Image 1 (cartoon, helix red, strand yellow):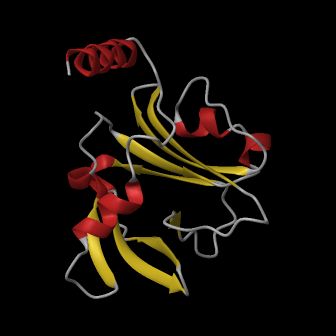
Image 2 (tube, rainbow, N blue to C red; image 1 turned 45 degrees about the horizontal axis):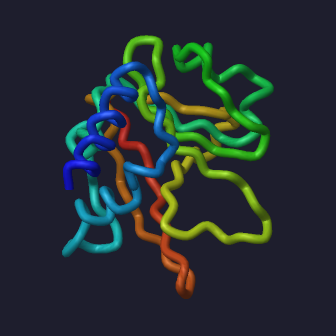
Length: 157
């Protein structure tokens, strides 16, 4: 038990020095699914109240192939690495990405337990939401054994 505590303490120290997890610890699908339990397949949620594991002031949803447009500069994050065939959900504070969830595109593997942002008719490659404006309608989408969540932004008027 002492060994596990030591390893966890080292992990926390490294993260304090700037590590950026890539989705292994935080499971956004499970966080949203738990918040919507007992409700219909559509529920309203506020990510600012749900995602508390990291300190953040905005979240950005970045589509694949945005790398050609420099999304890091657009969402105000230095050193954002994005591959051609991956989507990102970036939780940021100041000019740093404090948590990055990556979803690689593989035509052979269907998405399961994945969170998507409904970009609507916008041709944008990314959308950014301040923490107090990260309010969405979450829709559970099931296709056989595959379960995903589609987020539709609710913009303040």
